[in-house]
Each structure stands twice: as structure tokens, then as C-alpha cells.
Length: 217
Image (tube, rainbow, N blue to C red; front, side, top):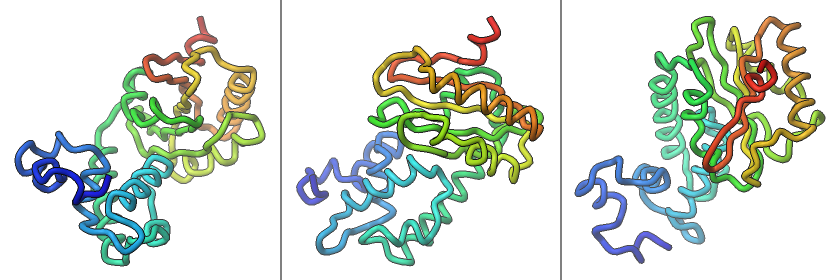
């Protein structure tokens, strides 16, 4: 539905004014920043594409990635990158992960995705979040999730440990053979490079399970 087809009280700007920012969806918040669309691509469509890129890349979106979306000009892309950088600094500040529940609270977007996504959290020595990144999209296999892709950025982050989280759109919490193989490879690689694999968490729409804790029981 296009913005002009929505009742005036439910349009993003008016809705924010009357109900407050927390009442708006992510896409509605992005619509306010984008402002308007272009011929052949309305602001709702543009905002959905930006949201999709955020789900994939987190706050690591570049100017080039944003400008590749039809309807996002340089000025809008610059504002968005600045906003994402500010949000990223706030997001990472003093967030400590002390449980699987605390980790999955950072990836609510994974619950409703129709494809498997693998997210890596980089942590410092005090288990504070340094970064959150989507590393792969698609059914987990040892060839798709190679340790070099998983550990490349945490090494740059000077991380002490990582937590790996991926979703099962099927709703099953049972680890597949590939899930187990990937976990073992990441654990072995982490031991070699000095970045511990703290946990590998499987998440569904309603629940989660820890593969590391399960292996230790």
C-alpha cells in the first residue's frame, strides 16, 4: 500500500506525532527519513528495500549499497549512514551477553525470516558486544559457512569470543548434521585463532536452543 492510500492519521509522520515513535514499524520509521519516492518506486517500496538491507547487513550499510536502491539519492544515503552509525554506537555501548537469551534479544528479525540467516556477534573479553553481522544467507553447510568468513571481521574487531546465531524457518530446534559440523569447525578454528566460540544458537519463531550448552550437558 502506498502512503497516499493510507488514512492520514495512520501515515508515518502523523502517527509518530500522535502515538509516539515506538508505535511505528521499522519500515514506517525509514519512510519518515526517506521522505518521498520517485517515479516507478514509491517511498514504501524504497523503505522495504532499505529494511531488507538492514536485516542482511545490520548497521554496516555503505553509501554505495544505499545509493544502489532506486529512489535513494546521495543526500538521503548520507543521512541514513550517519543515522546507522549513531544507532550502532548506541547499540553496542555496554551491552553485555551473559546468556543465550541475552544474545537472541539482539536478533529479533531472525524469527520471521523465510530463509536461514547466520549472524555473528563479536564480543570483547568482558562479553560486551563489539559488532553484529549477517555472514551468510541460505541453508547452513560447511561450504557456505566457511570459518574465514565467520572469523575475518571478529579478528579485525580484536574480539575475544563470538556467538553464532541462525534461524530455522521450519520451526524445528533440532540441529541438523550440517549444523553440528559447522559448529565443530568453528570451535576448532576459534581455538586456533584465539577467538572462542562461546555459543551457537538456533532460533525459531517461538523458541531457541544452545548447541554448545547441549554438547556440554
